[in-house]
Length: 233
Image 1 (cartoon, rainbow, N blue to C red):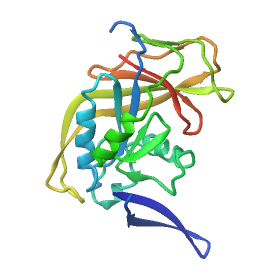
Image 2: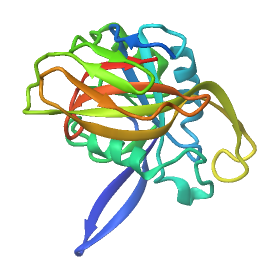
Image 3: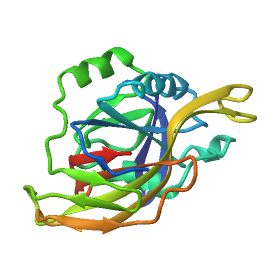
């Protein structure tokens, strides 16, 4: 596993690398959301990618693979990496009481975390995690209707996720995984904040998904808080 930590030395912020242990309308159904934060430049990540592929076969779990960018300097730039995916992982640091982002990390329902390459620990966490019970989300090709419900803060964020449901094999030419071909699935290609939900019924419009990509909606408390509801087509 790899972790990126910040160290203050004589007033200068230094990044330290350490190895540490640790299209018809679709109505929402009860799901568990598992987000994998991974990088093609991380030697610890291939087993986590494999675990996500296994998990993606479950109908009761929405799996999403976010490629982060902070390991690109190691010699291989992740072909799916985007800064906004890294920012999403960083937003989880304070709520999950982490000193910094690491890979491979899996976040369950925006509220619990586990090392992504530890299948036994992941399985145990999923067995003890309740599915989402937030407001209804009716998802169509170009809009999502969110029903009435409770929000602990004044508003929650509505996220539009576009992801590839297929298994994609990526040959890696350089870096820690040089010479390997890494399989990925449910790779997130775009993440867009549609707006805010205040507990009242609301409709959020968006463009139709590009060919080959699926759509998911995440209703989530702000600043990396728990996911309240989710739907995918």
